[in-house]
View 1 (tube, rainbow, N blue to C red):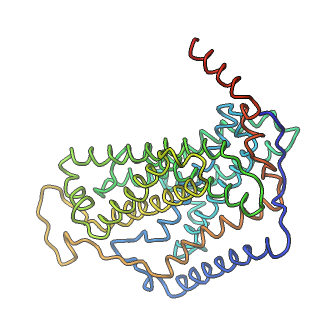
View 2 (cartoon, rainbow, N blue to C red; view 1 turned 30 degrees about the horizontal axis):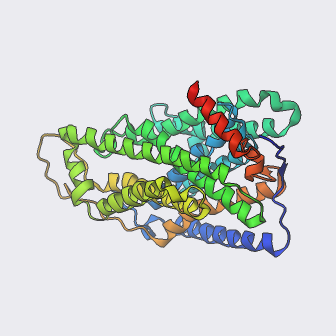
View 3 (cartoon, rainbow, N blue to C red; view 1 turned 45 degrees about the horizontal axis):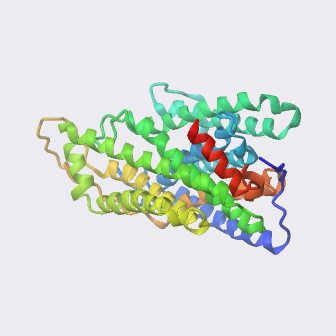
Length: 418
């Protein structure tokens, strides 16, 4: 880096700051109102039933938690892998990660039906349940990344930031492994019951988290009128291509593995061909919007310096991620249980029938509360803490910015000869 980059506050005052903050606050109030209504009226006002017990709030919550792990990508690249270009962005990366995690956990707690009984889950553990392990993983991750942020921002603790970054990196892998294992360990569901769920969710987290962080940094710089150079967005573009491609690869492997196993053939036919809304969400949402469209935008040679196109691709990745979570969580429950493999079962309770589920506005409102809480934490942290780089223009980040074309040509010639 040719010049020093300082960290600063958000630096906004008056209506330019409190106006957007008011909209975020309004969204939080709406979300809390939805949670209050569901708490007092019961799940009868939702689309959930005896077969689909994890509804749309879980789609939002799991998506936010998975994205929280991936949002730490930039900080990990800086501290763990020693890429100095990303060091000015590491504190903000940590803030975004913590904010997304808190938003996701808030939705989970408020969707319990009895949030006041959370203390029971925190004091009575069944360690054969992956949910019990996840309580440690989620809370531990939050404490670790907050400690990591403190060590990066406190001058006397900065020598320990590298070690804290390694711990945070390893813990985030464990966290996303635990989240994917929630589904991978459910052997009764044909849609789940796959060891590949754990690494697949890790790769998903890389794509979702980086897309979310990319939108945050672009939004903050556009909001404050600061200069954001194409050098940093080009790096994000390259990483997004890799992570989205990896997500598509793991999705293909997951479905090919299921197609190879006869016991999963019915599920594959359901989700790929006969699943109605779930098939449409898989092909149009997860594959079309989440994989194909972003890759076309990100690989097109004319998008390298286009902020709007890269931001659009990031939005598509997040929308595709939401579709993926809906297909996985809701579609996996809607598909009928195979209670006794190889045998015919007959009863009067919906044997072999795809469960009906239509999300209610209360569930959607509660889910959006998680995003609103995450946005509020990011904005207030950027306003009160020095986590926003004061300049990310090319002349500050690009080591070749001040070199002449002759010097660059000479360096390329030496590299080729070597």
